[in-house]
Image (cartoon, rainbow, N blue to C red):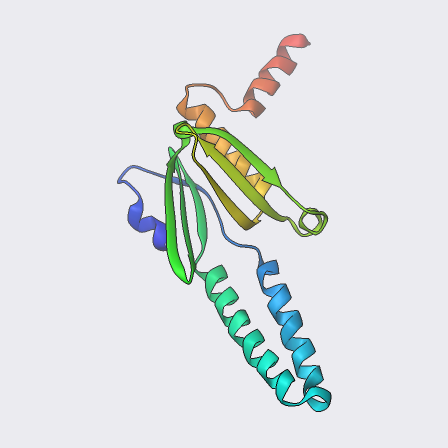
Length: 164
């Protein structure tokens, strides 16, 4: 159970949960490895890089551990922590547009950036989200259910049955 559960209403149900992808640790771990290998040849300079890389690994691990993206029956709740705490409570009916950007490595490892535009023309972006397509699918499914429609998968099944 995460920090988002504290914000749930009594009858609200969590339909999907994800967090930050493990790739957030890749760059600091690589720098840590290179700095460790450089100590014999570079000496004190490499030690300073090693200290910096160690701090970066610790902060990235804390950020990954303390980040959640939760889709409920009627809203998207997020909680992120990296130096400062940030949380968003976004009603699904306020979402006008959502977009996913996945770099080539993101497509291979299943992570990406999600940008959400709200009805008041403000927007939020979430980087390094684990399984962004699944998160977006659940957002769309729940928003459609709130608006009184049927999920797209059920509509396609019904259309397929009617055409036969």
